[in-house]
Image 1 (cartoon, helix red, strand yellow):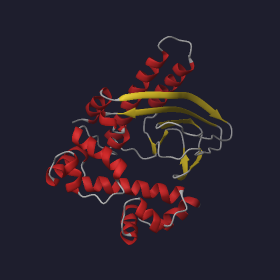
Image 2 (tube, one colour):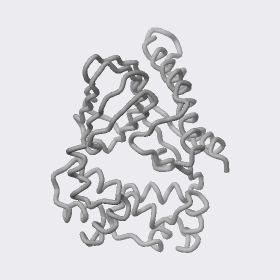
Image 3 (tube, helix red, strand yellow):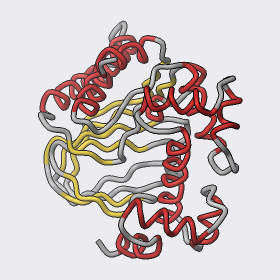
Image 4 (cartoon, helix red, strand yellow):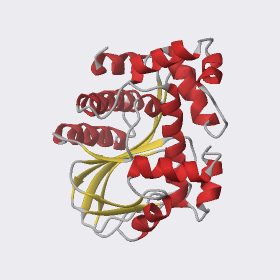
Length: 276
């Protein structure tokens, strides 16, 4: 199924809530305030170049065309800093599809990507911000939600077209992904995951490969790695503690798997984030 068709199918049966949207211009810095709902902040950089520092992500360079997606798992009170002047649009939203599955678990995004031909996306986001400011107008919320939905469709189309991601649409895959997101630390096997949706291990693996191009065990390992990455950059826990919290029973196996995935050791990764 083509990514644009799959995206529209998913969004048609999704529940989208926009909590706020706005255009921001900063001469010196920007602080991402406390997060009180299970949501995302989609931030598109329009002008200016600088660095963004955020708990769990380390220090990242941003420039026009950068798109940052901060997930609900980022702790309350997380702060970002961009030496100005910078112009950006932020859209604070929640997007859930079938059975409460997080949309970005189905089309997983990196926290920071640079989107080619970004001007069209930025113009779309500016329109959303302008509509949000028109608080007295009838139908503002409906229009903002509609425009945000169109923006998300366009972002995912470009993201997947570039070969950066795949989109799952099968309800059984969505259910397994939802369960993995909550139970990744448990000692799971393909057989146990298959039982969640009444499929044999071989049938589940074949379905995952068809939908996402990977086996369910690799999806589980990827979720564990994302948690390990978050803990390495956003906590002072030891590598052994992180390995157990992320679902890797053996710290040595975790270190080998992490090095294979990133090209460096967990401790070296943590140090490089502190001193970019």
